[in-house]
Length: 225
Image: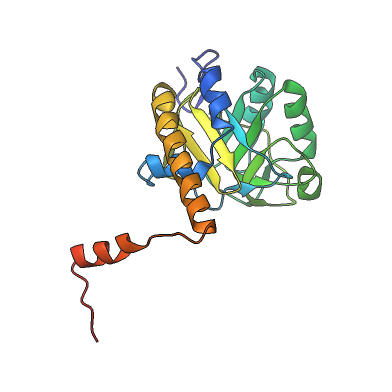
């Protein structure tokens, strides 16, 4: 097998039920129940008009500035997939523009995540299909390879395996390991419900901040009069 220039054609994708649940929960709540230590680089931000992202990862790694393997991934993509591209976070050359996004939409993908740059930003900003990227560059990509499809990648310190559940909203991108997704979403659902109750209490003017002083005393904070 040619390490660094290879394509895996089949893998197990996140369950449909988990994908649907991922569309209903804020990424921040999911992050909270994952110890707040997992997440894509903060510069990965939404470039589209807005909307929740949830779907199984179709992983792509490319040489910075090259998008040959992304072209192949668009052909391989199944409806509902999230194409996740590790372009090394490089911003010199765009990996995707509006034309490639149109092809992605025609393929039925749920969204595209690029740790790297896009172009045609104004057109992409009018789209409903979620697109997350690290920045914008007018310079186009090369198409020489190498790269990989269907193998583990990383976006910064966040590892993405093919088939993992990818979720995203205005707060950023997060990946849930496929086999643990249901359990994580269960905990996130409880967290979300708890925060909704807290918000309702706060809006009624009944917020109880007693826990703050309790925490300060427990941690040894000195109060000086």
